[in-house]
Length: 444
Ligand code: GAP
Image: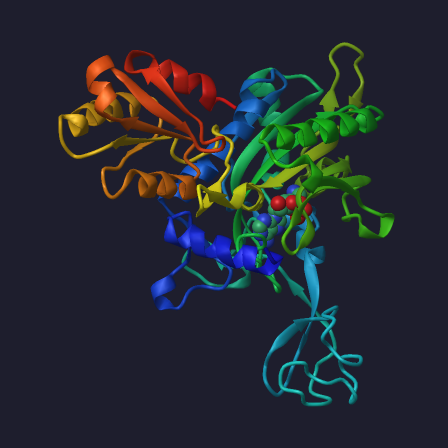
């Protein structure tokens, strides 16, 4: 399968089955903004829950937070985003198209008479590069003037930094400890694309871990290993995961060291999580700009210091794309072609399909009772339309790990057939044991 086709097929399956739709589609869509449909919202929710559970619930040293999207505008001056969160752009004065200054299709040096526009082909029409800030601006209150400008946050991290003392005091944590948050972020990206890979509105799952200076390198290594392990635990093909170390010239203004976790997408190796040693840059700057002391006071040794921060920053949408790409398969089964999403059962939107083999002999009633019982514990789907093979294939495409069929034998001995999406093996399970049987298998 050619890689470009795989992305096209995935986009089409995502729409057809209700994972992901283009935003405002009936109006022609809005550039690089996407909506999650009935299956997509479950998938993304499951990924977020799994992340939250592993960081906040299963550890004693990480607390949760949900900070607001709108923050005081000084936050973005302190963070460096007002001055530095920019891309250099060039405009074509004739066709009005806009390009990133490092776009390889630009011919010649923009701003000179020889430079040719890659879109309309005119020479000398490109402006010199100008810096363009990627933050979305809006106004707070009724007056739309410069004093009322606020930004839609371009990362969730800053909400954590400005709350670090509040969280630490309220939860009685001591350094080292972390704060985790899931929330929307917005960037007016110039070259968005590749479906939900780079969008203008997206969700981040970020964790900031506060440590004593000098202990930062050890914690950096620890988090790097923990995050890679977490992705492997999702069942993602380990051969398609790797670290990418940032060279000194790639490092963001705040970072002492940075590693990306990359996945081999159909369009190449790309980052989907970043692990950064942000030093004391953020808290130091917030202390300077706010005039409030943000030092940590060690009650045992009496030392005062600005903590160093190790950050793990994962895109929820980008992770959803990794999981979908990794799960997508086209297979031959008994001479027929099937499309299947081999999603890990713990993140699959629907956990089981329930099917009466035929619409008679009391099978729909019995299947209905099983469906009503199971839906109290996890999402299940009842389907009595079409041949049993077609019903299985519809659930294969949705990534549903188990298919439960009520047939003639069920009426005699109270057992059902449970079909495994991946092995296609069928096992007879007593209806009284069904819930336990599925629960054991759904946690992976
Ligand atoms: N607080 C650090 C930070 O925001 P980043 O490398 O700019 O670092 C972290 O972003 C993660 O957020 C990325 O690895 C990616 O998963 C996600 N992300 C960033 N920009 C995105 C975009 N335009 N669309 C979708 N996800 C994005």
